[in-house]
Length: 318
Ligand code: XMP
Image 1 (cartoon, rainbow, N blue to C red):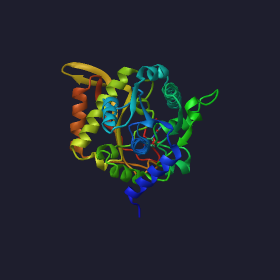
Image 2 (image 1 turned 180 degrees about the vertical axis):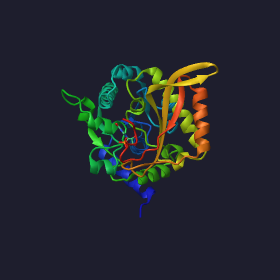
Image 3 (image 1 turned 60 degrees about the vertical axis):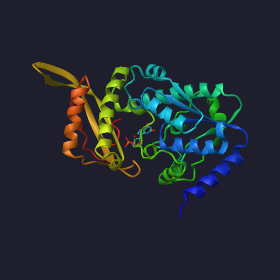
Image 4 (image 1 turned 90 degrees about the horizontal axis):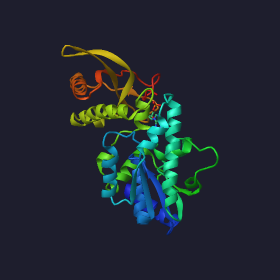
C-alpha cells in the first residue's frame, strides 16, 4: 500500500543526501507536479531552493498574481517574472500551432536561463517529472520541464540545462503526487486543478496571438471555469476551457447588426488525456454560461459547445 507520509519522509531524506548544502533552481508552472516537487524540495533544503514562476502572458485571468501569492504563502522562496511582452513579441504574426509552441518554448528557455544565471553557485535543476514522464520520456501535459525537454535550443544547451537534475517525484504516479501533496498540507483546490497546457491560451486562440485576443479569451474562460465551480461541476470534469475561433459571425444588438467573434467551450472527461469524452454539461448551465459570456464580454456574439470525443478529435483545437 501507498503511505504518503512515509513516502514524503523517504523523498526528503533522499533529496537532503543528494543535494547537501548546494543550491537548486526550479521552474514553477502553477500546476500540481511542479508545486509538489517544490514543496518537497523546500522541506529538504529550505531557501537553498530558488523557484522561478514566469508569466508568459498566456495564463488564465489573474492567475499569475494569485498563484504567485499562493506560492509565497506556502513559504516558497519564489521569484515571479512577468515576461508577457517577450512572449507576445515572439508570437507576433505566427499562426501555425507548432511554430507557436516553438516560439513559446524558446522564449521560456531564454527567460529561465537569464534568471538562473543571476543566481550564484547553483548546482541542481529541480524538475516535477513524474513516473509516466520517465517511462514515456516526453510529457504530454507537463509545464516548464516538458517544454524544456522538447525544445532544445540550437547552438548548444542553455546554461541551466548543464545543471544536475533532481526529480523528487520521478517514482510517483499522478494520483500519488496528489496524495503526497495533500499530506504536505497543500491547498486541495490547487491539487485538484485541471491540467493546463504549457503553451497556455496561445493554442486556444486559433490563428495569430494578440494581447487583445488573450484578454477576450481570459474573460470568457473565467466565466466558464468559475461557473463550473459555482455549479459543483468543476471536479466532475477532467479538463475544461474556451477556444477563440478565427471567425466572426453576424448577430443583433438592439437594432444594430454586429459582426463579432465566436468562442467554443470544451469540457472533457478523461483519465490520462490519451482518450477523452465530451461532458454532458446540463443545458441550464450551458444556457446561463452562454448568456453571461455574450452579455459581458465585448467582442463576442456567439458561443458554441464542442461535442467531439478523442479520438478522432483531440482535446485542444491545435
Ligand atoms: P490533445 O489536444 O493532444 O491534448 O488531446 C492532450 C493533453 O495534452 C495537453 N497539451 C499540451 N500540454 N504542451 C503541454 O504542456 C502542449 O503543447 C500541449 N498540447 C496539448 C492538453 O491540454 C491535454 O491535457
